[in-house]
Image (cartoon, rainbow, N blue to C red; front, side):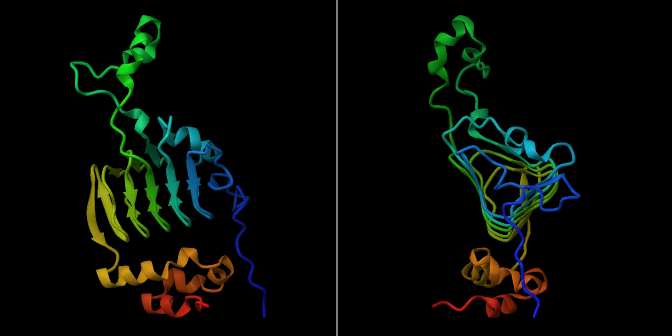
Amino acid sequence: MKALVPADPTALHPMPDQPRVVQLKPLVTSPLIEVGEYSYYDDPDDATAFETRNVLYHYGPERLVIGRFCALGTGVRFLMNGANHRMDGPSTFPFPTMGGSWAEHFDLLTGLPNRGDTVVGNDVWFGRGVTVMPGVRIGHGAIIAAGSVVTKDVPDYAIVGGNPAVLIRSRYNEEDIARLLAVAWWDWPVEHITGHIRTLMSGSVDDLEKAAPVQP
C-alpha cells in the first residue's frame, strides 16, 4: 500500500512554482495574529507582505485569529480597531497624532470604541477583495463572496455577500450544521485527514461522520 504523506504545514510556499501562494502560519510574526495550519493567502504582488498590507491599523491589544484550512483570496483585508476615530465632537480628525502642540491632547484618543478580537473559524473561504471590519466573528465553513464588506458576525456554514455583507443562503440545514460542528474535521489528526481527502471534498455529512476517527 502506498504511504500517505500529509502536506507540509511549515512550507511557506506550498506550491513552489506559485510564489503568489503562501501559508500564513509560518509567515506571521506578530504576537497579535494567530493563524491555524494550512490556511493560505494568494496574491500575485507580494503575498509575504500579508501582515503589513492586509492587516491594517493593528496597534493592539485586540487580536486577529484565523482558524485552520482557510483560503484567502487576493486583497482580503482585515481592518482592526486602530482605525476608529472619535465621533462625539464636531470633528472626527485625529489631531494629536499629527504632532506639535496637538500631541498634548493625546488623551482625547483614549477610550475609542473597541469591538474586541476579530475571529475567523476553520475552513472559511474568502473571495477576492473582501474587507472584514473590526471585531467581526466568522463561523466555521463560511463562504464570503468576492468584494464583500463584512460588518457583522457570520454564522457557521453561511454564504454571505455584498456591501454590507448579508446572508445569501446557508450551505446546510440546521441539523446538518450541528452534525458538521460535532465532527469538527479540522481537529482530526492530519494523518487521518490525509486518508479522507475525497470524503472531505466531495462526500456527504453521513460520509464524514463515518470517516471520523474512533474516540478512545
